[in-house]
Length: 252
Image (cartoon, rainbow, N blue to C red; front, side, top):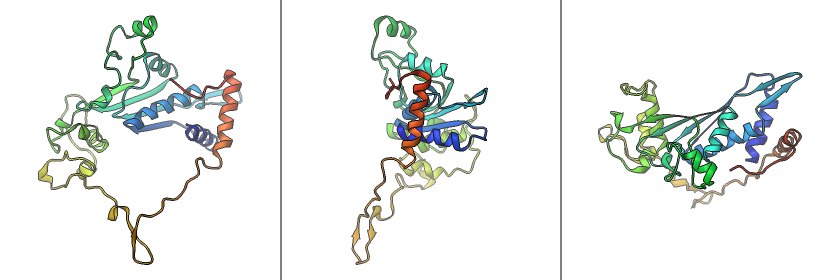
């Protein structure tokens, strides 16, 4: 969170002469974090830029791939108040976008009453608009497939490439390689001759040392934050305190 907020602050300052927009994307848990990050940026008003007497609000958009529900109905409504735009892309055979919220969710007509009157804690709601895709509509993919394949990002990207609207024929429009579908799953039809789960590191990550032995290379140690993070994070906190008088370290 600290890295995202400080980096957004830095980039907005660096490109202050440009017409800006903020786009955040993620898959699965990353999709949930993308929505939380977008909310965080908007709630802290990092996207509100003042230039003399003029105030500009930088638009914030989230592209969510196969993300679960994040927050309750109040969180959804607050995101809408902050004008955070969210487009969720899902596979209808994927279970992840259906959780949490088995008991009550945005489809339940009495959700608002349950949250307001009963303070029900297990209430969840999706944010934004939704594109529903179906891997069975692609002629390149198997009609079945396990839950992991239905949740796979490469499958979703393949489906987006061929999607032209609800009820319209599936037709790929780019040169995106269909072999990418099987990079980490087994959903491509067998007649295309692409092995399943084909992606792997060369020699499974092993390298040959100067003395001829095969070893696992040491990973470079990275600092927790780049040097400029603390400075720009401090600017974020100062600005929020000036505007609201307090700073909360978390969101619900």
